[in-house]
Amino acid sequence: MYMQNDVSTSAVSPTQIEQGASVETVKWTRTDTTWMLSLFGTAVGAGILFLPINAGMGGFWPLVMMALLIGPMTYLAHRGLSRFVCSSQKQGSDITHVVEEYFGIGAGKAITVLYFFAIYPIVLIYGVGITNTVDSFIVNQLGMASPPRFILSGVLILAMMSVMVSGEKLMLKVTQFLVYPLVAILAFMSLYLIPSWKADALMSVPSSTDFLGTVWLTIPVLVFAFNHSPAISQFSVSLKRDHGANAAKKADVILRNTSMMLVGFVMLFVFSCVLSLSPAQLAEAKSENLPILSYLANVHASGFVSYFGPIIAVIAIVSSFFGHYLGATEGLKGIIAKQLRSSNKTVSDSSLDKFILGFMFFTIWGVAIINPSILGMIEALGGPIIAAILYLMPMYAVYKVPALKPYRGRISNVFVVIAGLLAMTAIIFGMLS
Image (cartoon, rainbow, N blue to C red):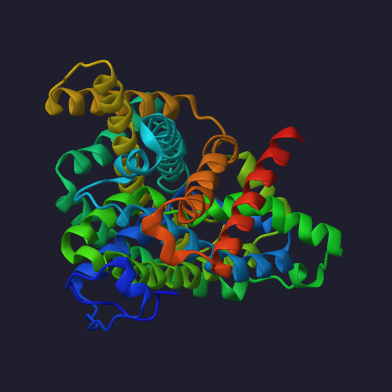
């Protein structure tokens, strides 16, 4: 495996790496930290804020098993997707171009469409999530009347999108600015809730059948909650530009550190929330379609939780919105560009960007006004396609694409495929039942 050391920017081919070529170690840089925080921010959004609800309803001990599984699942799956993008011989090729390069025009179109529909529903979820969170804060913490939903949602979505329109550099800076306080307050909140932990959850030990069933059915929410694949394509393109043939090894190190950071901070937060609330309260939070922090703010006597809970929720949703919006617009632009090319038509980039901007705003706004079930959207829309693209497609490519030959024959590949299949079957089973 290529996860131990980072490498210099000198050109090294996959064959040389496979044969153990000697390369210099590159020290961790400020840019690496920026990317790690951006990837962390992409993952810490609605999934994390709703993860304690779904995962906690199954009990404490299945949650322990989930904590052991999600670290390797997250790192190995995202590493596989990054290696897939980095393996392209064409400079500046994002995931939509790499798929077409390796699998042909037809498959390229199909997977680009799937890629878009894996990420787009999540962007819609953030429109619903931030509207509900801010509305709950206005009503429950500020004691004011609920503002008209169409106005509140429109203002919030417009504010988030304005950062994206301003450019990638500003987006990375804003994300970095948001993630630092998010990490600090998230850790403090996890520790602050410890005195209110209840031992009831520890006493409840499910049967082995219920235990395994709970873990299996919760895997899709875990996959979603730790998913930062929408930012992996542009992340990999950036590393290819800066590190050339050594981009994959640089990505391995950044992704490993991101995964450790995610598991450490997020699972501590999840355990703390689950131990602070009863299963009945978790079920109530789910029925109210609220993030866990907003629910805690409404039921907890502490002024700190009441005011900082919703603030953390807003920061988490905004930071995650950026990465997913980037991936969704990348996918939509790829779909339209491929369709125009096959029809021998051309449209200026500025016109295409304006259309995508309008489409994204009005659809996110419309769904935020309708206010569908967030957890239902996670399970039904995003889950199956995320599992297929993040877990299965890169592993298929490893055994089909010559450039990825050095990564064949790894036990980690088998683990990723099994995790992806478990996620997909759990989603299908949940939808049918």
